[in-house]
Image (tube, rainbow, N blue to C red):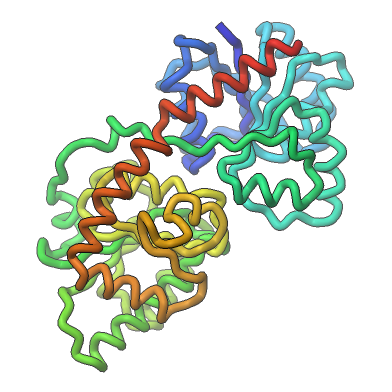
Length: 373
């Protein structure tokens, strides 16, 4: 059984933590024994604890923290670690620097995001990632971006994020609509993402206002449309203020952080991913698994889910309010297309983006890398 140490600066509740939890669920005490070293305890800490893996607190003050690198080297020896798996720049650099102190454990890094790195970071990545045994990219878009910044193509392997299909099964209840006073016959459009610049909430809110005015001006025959935006982040309050300024506060619910994403999605009729930059879009996959048609911005890895010809949903350009509103109206009015995306989107996740595929491919990388040491 391979001993794998994950490094995470902050135990939050984002997509990276969800990715690690998914691997734990499929591989821990099965083919691997997982450990997690973290620096700061966050809201996702209890979930890791509940999953039964050993948690080790280890200060990681910066990417160049040699004290942390030394501590990591000792920790790997104490626990007889076979693989170090990192997820962000800070932890990856520290893992590479631990080799200075005699740490021979291979380091795998998963790149979860599309970054516009500075010249300094690009240069350091080119130098230090030579010492990574493998880099996992969560999409081909991420792989191409890494190559464009000088990372060796042979180091990179694409492994798509996977969804636990069984978890997302089940019928919906109406508790969510009751909680937020949303009528049963309202057409509910959902969004799940962190409120940060790259997620594009400002664009979405402006599109909502544009659609509201368009419906009123043209007397369009559509159901009452409501929106539920799930998530927290530094721009949440700013977005609430913008919604008020745009005159759409009565149409938009800001839920903040929620743990009942499945219930929320199952009460929605349509899902929108409005990101300016998206490495893949795990929330898109979750929505599809719940049987929701999806509209997504063509902003990175989303095209690898939706398809360049709108095979499994609808792509729009980021910032194109008219394009987004046209897509929403199209899916409200075209029931045949709506039903097609409901069925084929879910089938796509089952066949291409399910967690069994992700965990098996990741374990194969672990085994291959370990066999070389």
